[in-house]
Image (cartoon, rainbow over all chains, first blue to last red; front, side):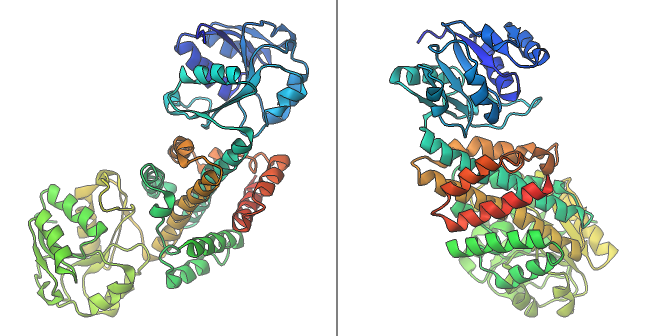
Length: 258
Length: 258
């Protein structure tokens, strides 16, 4: 693949900003940045020396690779109005199937899914981000694979069925563990403490699974099946029925896994 | 306090090893290391130029500070046979009350609780570990506080009632989030993928709460109340009723918190 290919971005949010900036930094040409809101489009376009547009019909360069970085629920509607059907186009969503392109009669399409959570002003080392690639032909797959390789060494071929499970696994590993931090934070605040006490332990818990399976790293009263401690902790949650239910359910599952 | 004081360790496991080594490295004198298993005692004693013993009655130096690093359920029995009652003695457990010393008629006692998960061969930067201190008198509190200050700047006065809630919060933030990683790992393995795909995201999720509350950092289908994705993910878990129950319960709680 000619890495001098140009890329255009559909969307100017966090994902588009991180990807466009990373490609630009790596010497690729960003042609256009589209957003319904022209101000947002301009903000990103200025950073990567591209042209901003709020008209989807202006995305009409056949030599360009189009990367769709918009919210899941607007992908479908956006593709309906997309002016050219034969350029390579890929979306960056973890949960939208590749079929969405076929239904709209695109001929060269795929998935370009960076497995990371991007926040507006927080630096992410893109070299460490795993990318998940899928495409409708081997050639498109190779093109998207090579494109991801410009940014990272961690490129994976993941089909739509796998991607569904991957996205679900990410909900457990990230969204749900973040909720566990929220519960911990509430319990601490209610007792005149704060989460700073637990932050080193939280980061260490996440780091520990780099070289071991999480099952090997499991600790705590449920892992030891320490019924006395479990009973006392359930009593502490007497006035938090929601947290008590969560405590009981996860504890039961950890004990069952022992 | 005279930081030239000597310290003896009761227990020679992970916590004792990390603490004794850290004190020794910082110039303090380790007098004795006790373990029921003399080989374990010797292993640690050799590292810190101390004397190993498997006889509790040999812990009879009145000028020494004793740090108890044994499993919660043997603390009580061990203290029963402890030969001297007036030296400063502290245990390192998150869940055992300070009363355990009073019941055994000790006169100078407290808690010296490092809030970190210690594994045998894994380096922990003790300077970043928060220590929780409690004692039966202001003077003992100051002595334990100063002792912790030798190792870290993050020393906190936490009473027994708070410590119970802190320990419970740690179960949510660490033990339960680790279980979320386990579920994710299972889901990936079942679909020919592995946890390496999610590790950067897991670490980033833990790091994100350094500067923001976890509630502010919550993302995912439940946070967006995206019923279509939630329904699809529940269907994916049709054959995993345990995981489905966890998914449903945590999702309901995140939605309720919105």
